[in-house]
Image (cartoon, rainbow, N blue to C red; front, side, top):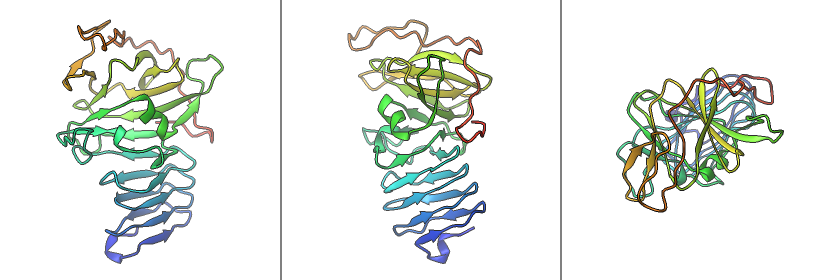
Length: 244
């Protein structure tokens, strides 16, 4: 383990399972193989994780790069430290605040770790920016992009009604939602909370079956209720390791 008190800004880690806490200055962290954990990622930090199932805990949105590398890698996001597009810190984590250049090779998001109710704002572009797990989810012969989201019962996912997200099926652990002709997906663990719409007024509302709003920009999307149909297989990552 390497901690910020050591005042080391640049780290080249070996093949073990390392825990690295970034210092308050800009850090360049190059991890080797192994299940590494990098915490305190902040302004100007660059993380190249390499092989292994790694975890990343940023403290703001001003880091330069988190590259998960190979393996099944997880981005841990905490209640209220990332502002949404309106600058609101009250329990929202907005994936749109991260740019495409900042995040790559991230297969999983975890908003459950602090035990505080968190609402995660998800869009098609923000999911694609992560470049998550790629496999044929729906059996149509095309490779699909999937990000797995782990949350607690008090957490929520917020989606925009005009984007066209729809419930697509489930496996033993996750419910799956898709968009863009079933090319972009996120998976939401079955023990988590609700999926809500964000309406143009900015007020989230629950998504019942075939719900529509009087606002013409809010389309009808049949996203619930959810049946445990087991229609989607449990995939493996390209290196043969099970996804969470």
